Image 1: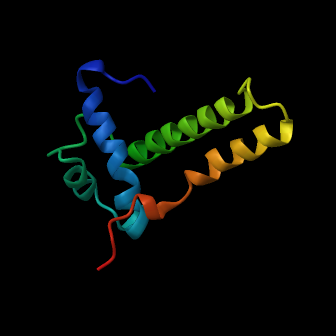
Image 2: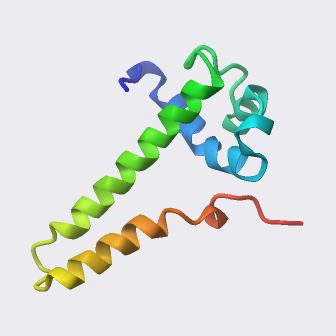
Length: 107
């Protein structure tokens, strides 16, 4: 997805809000207004046409970032053993799957 460079900061804020908001409540119970509030924006429809589009774009970015980390781990020149590179790649991938680092502290 190509983002309007003038609003790139807003996209980053939106994507940063997706996991903390969707995580505890799920896709169906989360409103666009909740996402906007978590992102510090008044409206998200200036950037996306639907909640589904926000979710899909955020997931695409999340997966792209994860694959980039895996690729970096696998292509490290200083790792002599393939096993070391594979372990590093899995650590990079699965380390991103922890929702706990994205959720607000429980009260």
